[in-house]
Length: 236
Image (cartoon, rainbow, N blue to C red; front, side, top):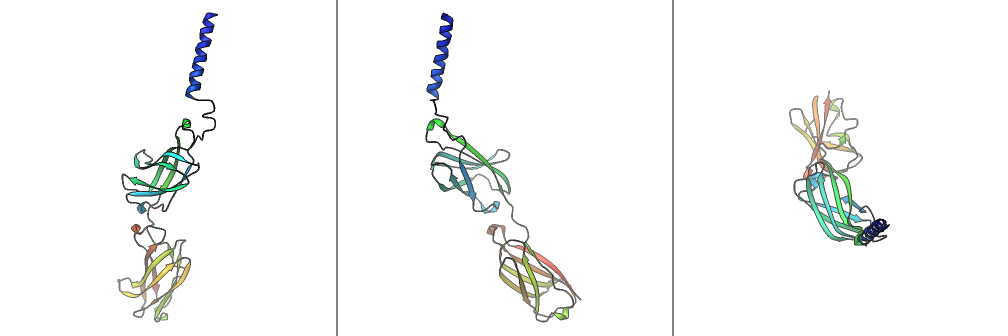
């Protein structure tokens, strides 16, 4: 009986110690995952040189001791930012250790979203993808001009259509295969389709020509540079 009493006493002491370390109900009402979301101004990698501004939104009344980190899929730390407290939304400037490249990365965050510090820090992670620049101007030339060269007097008209992107400051030129310029024009903005009228500097002659279009894609950062597209024409 004495042995059983000692064993029961030891169990009681152990349970009492656990109760002191983890008070009853301290974990029951705790948020178990960090309630946080992110948004970026641009998903193009070349939009960011040294800093990635991330709009972070808290799903809790307050998140204390917030740390946000960006990792490659190989586990290399690319950048991080800390904030003592976050309520609502804020733009955090995540400073990069290396140049950002197109591809997929992991955003990892840690913080304390619960009012009670006994709940401890919580975590969250999500995958984010950064795109490379579009390599060519996304336009098409529906029903390009053709037929007899002598039918085109003064102007060469054709339809230029966007493949879904808004483009600005387009430069349009028409040259023969020897590189001689026959005419040029400009388009301020393109979304959908429009008719382009290129004034000719001289009359077209039978042979091959190229319509060359160069401009800026609005969704891309300026660091992506202008893009171009071509359409070959043949006149009898």
